[in-house]
Amino acid sequence: MNDNAFFMNQEEESQIDLTPMLDVVFIMLIFFIVTSTFVKESGVDVTRPEADTAVVTESNSIQIGITSANQVFMDKRQIDKRAIRANVEKSLAENPGAAVIIVADQDSNTSTLIEVMDQARLAGATSVSVASEDK
Image 1 (cartoon, rainbow, N blue to C red):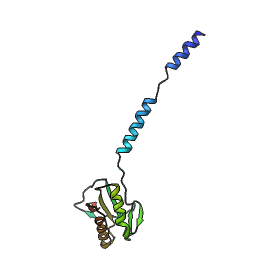
Image 2 (cartoon, rainbow, N blue to C red; image 1 turned 180 degrees about the vertical axis):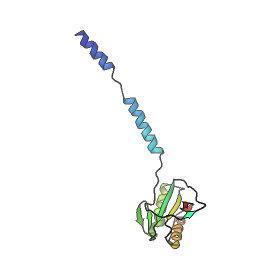
Image 3 (cartoon, rainbow, N blue to C red; image 1 turned 90 degrees about the vertical axis):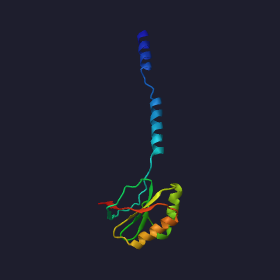
Image 4 (cartoon, helix red, strand yellow; image 1 turned 135 degrees about the vertical axis):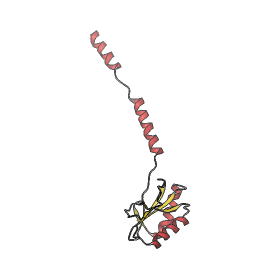
């Protein structure tokens, strides 16, 4: 009888409490979620023109895509040209000071590109640029 009592006490003492480790893991998870940035892409595949002066920009930007058929995309959905300004204003309200990057297909019309740039500037964007491929 005494032997069984000895083994029970030893078995109870050998269990490891995992609560502090789980607390640390959850705190780290919350930290990484809060500090991470999410990139919203235009949601359309385009063939970008090449440029010798292409530079890498920050990931904290608003992307607007223009297809070869002159369709405008934002956040992986097609939008009307008249709604560009409202969508950019909404995105700038969520992310103040963000740069607007227009990802235009090399076969798209220049008039569509200029119209998108104008609407982005009218929405309050201070930095509007056109994406290109590095040669």
